[in-house]
Amino acid sequence: MPEFPEMENYRRMLSEQIIDHPISHVLVNREKSVNVPAEQFAKELAGQRVIFVERRGKHLIFHLNSGRRLLLHLMLGGMLYYGTEENRPSRNTQIEIEFGQKTLYFIGLRLGYLHLLSAKEVDEIFKPLGPDVFDRRMNGERFAELLKGRRGALKSLLVNQHVIAGIGNCYADEIAFEAGLLPSAQVQDLSAETTDRLYEAVVRVLTDALAHGGYMETPFMEGDTLTGGFDEMCKVYDREGEKCSRCDGVIHKIELSGRKAFFCPSCQHEH
Image (cartoon, rainbow, N blue to C red):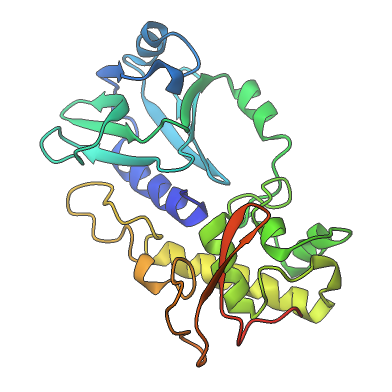
């Protein structure tokens, strides 16, 4: 599932490609991916321009010049591609938005969605969401406050969007590894020093992942050589059975609260 680095990578590239280009045509191939009838969705978007692309956690918000918003959540397996019919991935598209000669393809939205909403409706949806991982007000002290009074496994906390928005399965494991903590480490048992180390790991891993285009391998557009660069840099995620890059241990996989978790039992600890 796309997380903060993948969605921020998309946001930056979309901002370079589609801003202020009029929408010339809209095709909805799967009506369940939108929240209004397909005909109404296409009609309201026709002739509109995206004036700003915002990211919040794992969501993207396309601000239209009409004042309306398009709220995107790719969920599991979702991806974007911008280009022509000839060079797009050979997968089913749920929604296609044309900007003149090029089209933005929404692929794999069988669980995800693209909803047409008012600004107020978007604000209401985000009310339960925790602060963004790179909120300008976020620092080590505020991060520690978010953890205060919380109980349970570290991984469960990191992927809880009501606590902090933007982290999912992949980066929760990579952050735990960077901090030298087991994904099963109990949050209530972490010292102030360990919490500081954990926050530094969050910043370091996510900054690095964004700089290398995240872990999703399919390019956003023709000529895109950045997207997916972090996939081969993952230290533990999806590396079961491989040798640890930091010690002589071997990466293990367990199930933790219904989620798979990858870690090195030799150099990751409870505290």
